[in-house]
Image 1 (cartoon, rainbow, N blue to C red):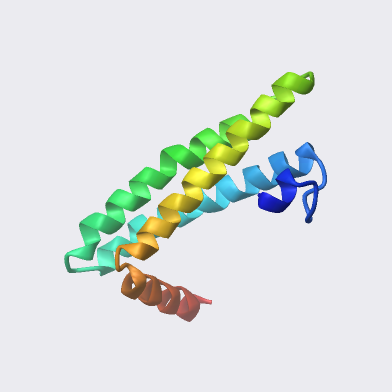
Image 2: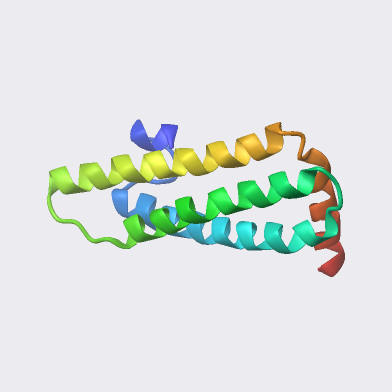
Length: 119
């Protein structure tokens, strides 16, 4: 996002940003769904916290999907949409950061090992 706002990096146009936002939102929804299923395997104090964080992720990702798919015309409307996209992406990343920060590392390790064993 930092590189995009500076006109650098892989995302060259606002369409690139909107497309990646849709992909990011879809993957976030998949993550929230997987975390809810995985929470059945967690049997300690982390389970309610894991479910709470997964529930927070869902509305942010849905809003991101809606915003990314909304068509706009004109420079001002496009700029506003970009600002909203950046804001929503930052919120989603912050949610994921706080999940990690709240000692859910052990849950992540368990999740990754069970996910890899299915592959």
